[in-house]
Length: 178
Image (tube, rainbow, N blue to C red; front, side, top):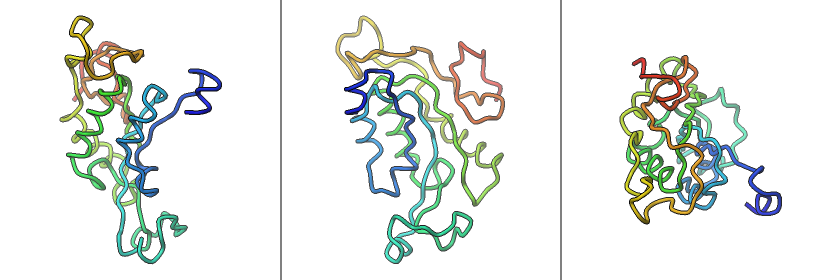
């Protein structure tokens, strides 16, 4: 944020909660702090193994291929944190005025890419906020994200873009294919 303050809006951030969990950073609080600095969002989860954290700490250098010995592993959305967390995640994006792409990033060693994308899509498709809330309507008065410049006002339908795992606004690519 200090760099953005010094250089202006050319400095932005790709927000990925999976890199915050192993550092004990609350992604929702970080998202609010960063606010309109967020230019892109990844949906990827992390699962902590508390027994291994007690032995290896959070800065575990065990190879990612050694899943059972690691203090934490990247997981598919919903396999590290509950659906409730992900509901709060998309709600906080709305709160800060983010209404753009959410890319599913797959690095889950427990399942292949196709299964990981299907499961992440299944969870996110049910919780993505598709219509603007009261605070997003021009004449609604004060509400979430008031005063923030909105990059896009498109509504999400949760479509996967060509299998790459990216949610795209429906008015850009047409109706969902699932």
